[in-house]
Structure formats: C-alpha cells, structure tokens
Image (cartoon, rainbow, N blue to C red; front, side, top):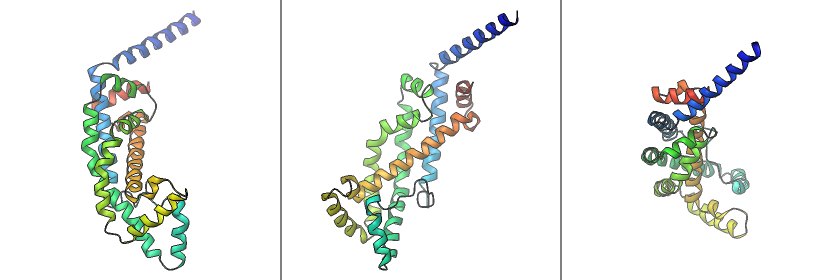
Length: 226
C-alpha cells in the first residue's frame, strides 16, 4: 500500500509539472516574462547609466586593454599617472553616458518577442533572456553607443596618443583591431557591462521570484521554481 501511495504521488507530481509547462505557452506566461524582463533591463540601465555606474563598480569598470596595461604602468612610473587616470575615467564616463540609450531598444526587443522566444527563455538557462537581448540588440546598441562614446573621449587629449600607440600595437599583433580603436573598445566594454548586469538581474529573479515586480512575473517564475 505504501508503495502504491508513493507511486501515485510521483505520477501526480509529474502531471503537475506537465501542466506547468503547458501554462508557459499562455498569454499570461508571456506577459509575466515581459514584466520581469522589463524590470530587469530597466534596473540594469539605471544602475550603470549614472555617475560612477561603471567607474565605481569593479565588475564592469573599464580599464586599459590588457595588452596596454604595461604601457600604462610605464607611464605612471615616469609621472604620467594623471593622464592614464584621466583616460580610464573617460572610458567609464563615456559608458555611463551611453547606457541610457539602451532602455528603449531593450524594451522594444521585449515587445517584439515571439511566443516561441518567450517559451525558450522560460525553460532555458539562467541567462537565456540575457542571450536573447545580446542576440537581438547588440548591433543597434553599438550604433547608438558609439557616437556618444566618441564625444565623451574626444575631450581627453591623450585619446589621440592612445589611437596612435594602439594602432602600432595592432599592426604587430600585440592587441586586437577592436582594442586598437578606442571608440570600439569602450563601446564593446559598455555593452559587456550592460549584459553582465542584465544577467545578474535575470539570475536574481529566477532564484527568488518574489524579486519580480509584477504578480504575473512572480507567478510564472514561481511555477518554474517548483
């Protein structure tokens, strides 16, 4: 008798799980997901798109490219530390100025999400929504970010010296062509930082559905947790 009861319980739990998966195709499930993604995307943009959003966050702070770090240390050793600091600060200020441009594109990507996209995100890994954003918004975000980055770093005189130095380094294969272009380097790092923060918000909501702002979002991610 005990074995029968245990088997019945297992079958019932399996049926409940199947029902939960069926619910993922409903309008409520899609709406709940969009609520959560909008919340996460907006929070990530708000955290980064303010003073010290990048500069004060060690996870996303933009340094000199790895291959030029040695050059930066040499410059500091000969009394040019202030110039290096100014350049690195300009990287991060440029990213902070550019990131608010992401909000509309991210929200549009959420609105245009298909039912199949939504289902794939819901049953996917912890960063499946982030990968959706990366796939659908990276190119247009880069186009939006780049002119803002250009304006911000143009104020730093050392930027021209960087371009010359990095260009020579790229010709010798010491750094990538992307890192040789200051605009591209900062733009790419800004995008990396944005997607990293979106991933953290996504993971937090999946781990604790109560972090989701809307009732539908809490319901949907609560189902997935069960």
